Image (cartoon, rainbow, N blue to C red; front, side, top):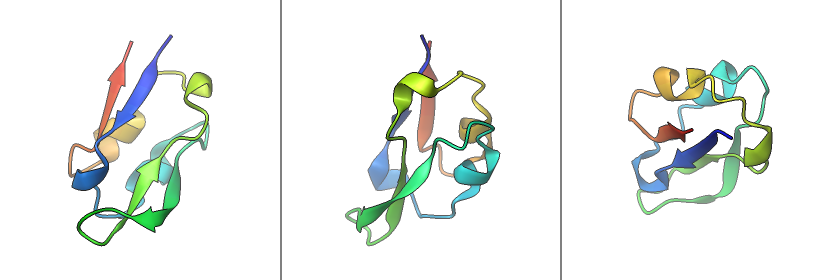
Length: 67
């Protein structure tokens, strides 16, 4: 079962991954990371289909998909 992993401190809050996810699983946190940005997160990782479109869209290598 695929599982997304997010490196929150790398995220700059561009939200490109939220647009790229066909399942619309990725949301932006309501808290800030150490750099002062809201960061991407996936509250329902079990619904991830492992397409990795989110990871490909991310310019900062925040997301990795583990299969």
